[in-house]
Length: 418
Image (cartoon, one colour):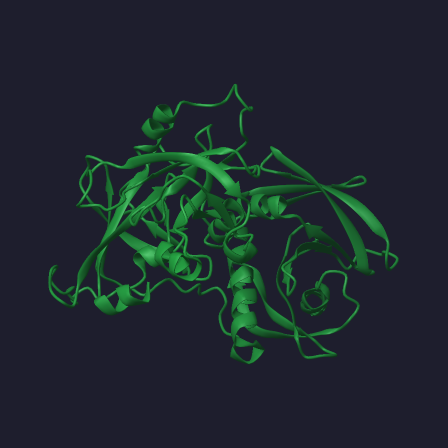
């Protein structure tokens, strides 16, 4: 009974250094031994945080929280702890014997230490199998087998509650994938008024065949979505998740396929003025059946109306480049090509035709999307300003095994909304 009471107390109090009491849970998070849900501020009734917790045989209860401000936390609780309120402690954590981080925790309650988890620690925590935590002389081991889906469920919890409110909270472990047509529902024939062939570009980001593209590339597809690597037979791709707000979609190749070559995401921000390379399949069916390569620079670190989720690039892009990879000069992903400026609209408004103004989604939004979808992608640091640079031909050659033509049939109504 004492354990259940302590777990409930931990869930209520994990809202990142907040002194206000919380109420809940609203909805549920249930993954393995992890339980939790959404919580409100008891004084205002507003959404406070999402949290999940699980007890360990070593006597410690882990609590993972994600609050309304988008901050992750990790708390260590035990009935044997006796901290003074406001007491601070440094906790060193090692993941899978390799990745190490230092967390700075505060005792909001006598029996619990709570630390903010930076984004890089959250990503490692999500993917690791074992965590060793050291504080003073205490050394504790934690099995992290289920933390991947727990992190995804908590992110989903916060997104859902912010959009729909606490009153509509449900099972947050059910992360909605884009619905697929029933197996016996056939797409309208190509060439009819009801269907139009559509295409874009995507790229593989894991050995399990996860493929990133734009949401607008697959939104409104009727029937199968197909992926083609140059010179190879097409494969049916299933939709894993999508994010219309950030224009991202995650597809996956059949489980029988594995990919030894896949894209690595740059782990450091790109700078304005850096050179970039775009690879994709523009105007497929009119131009070459192979991918095309264009080059340019990062013109700005923000998009239309200072939208910081995007990069502005000068590399030429055309319809069909959408969803394709944007590379730096070491061959690492620095963005996802998403759009070109509406030339005719700008020309009508200003009397001038804009040139070489195109946009790509930054890797920050991409990595958050992949983390929430529990994708085992890989990152890499740039290898040096000049020493690690590759020729454009080499970058294109390396990208060939994982850059895909994405195609489907779409309705005229869906195309009109694009």
